[in-house]
Amino acid sequence: MTFTAKLKNRIKQNDLARILIEERKRKKYEKLAKTVPDREFIESLYEKRIGRKPDLDNPRTFTEKLQWLKLNYRNRDIPLASDKYEAKKYIERAGFPDLLIPTLAVYDSADEISPDDLPEKFIIKATHGSGWNFICTDKNSFDLKRKRRIMNSWLKQNLYVYGREWNYREQTPRLIVEPLIDDKPLVDYKFLCFNGVCRAVQVNHDENGIHYVDYYDSDWNLYRDMSSGTADIFGKAIDKPKKFDRMKEIAENISGKFPFVRVDFYNVDEKIYFGEMTFFPGSGFWRITPEKYDKMFGEWLNIEELFNEQNCQNN
Image 1: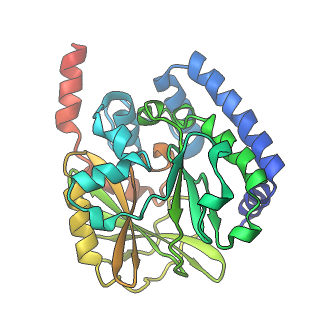
Image 2 (image 1 turned 90 degrees about the horizontal axis):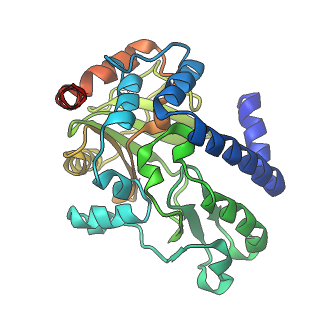
């Protein structure tokens, strides 16, 4: 584990430090959102994170096209499908209610949460964020009073200001409680769908206490050298899940109307659970290496029709 990763873990374990840092970050980016236009902000942050200026007028790579979509593409289903509570309704309407993890409760404020309403094991998530969650394996050891402060700090934030993902601007911040899928190690299968076709799979899993993120093609062949810079790469293929083809089929069914979306699943004892839908992984600021993969993914993401429509509107 890198020094930066260790430092982030320590901050996460210190409630007060976590709140202060997030509050300072929130105020900084809210100010920028009011003073810096989306395109200018995106160009600056992209260059800082990826090391080169993005071509937003003629995007070619995957990360450039994600930025273009943030600025120019609007679909009314995206804010719903990327909300962790509303996405369940979206999946149910799509005909897959059997994939849903039950919702135990939804709250507008952490102050509304009563310990009596919580099961012995659960997870609390912010419906409008990424990585904003608490996993509880023993309710008796869960300090709800202290955690409320952090959860209420989540509810003050709008993820839009951090990466200019327009869909988050239209969401209502809430907290959702679900039963904990107690499967160790829990593997997260993330199907990357381009224009309704699954082209690659991101696999997040832990091994000996280390978190790994690896990428496979749609036939479960590992890209051994590919990294998105979010975690270490395991570098060797893990077993293909038994219901891989079914997960891929469902992901393609769900993703059909979008230029790009990542559809996440868990597969526990061969039971498929829906996780979430993500339209701009890493807000499009991941530094994908080697760069050939950023270019390859960009070739798969066809925005030509949308691009021509936008140009017509501008002329």
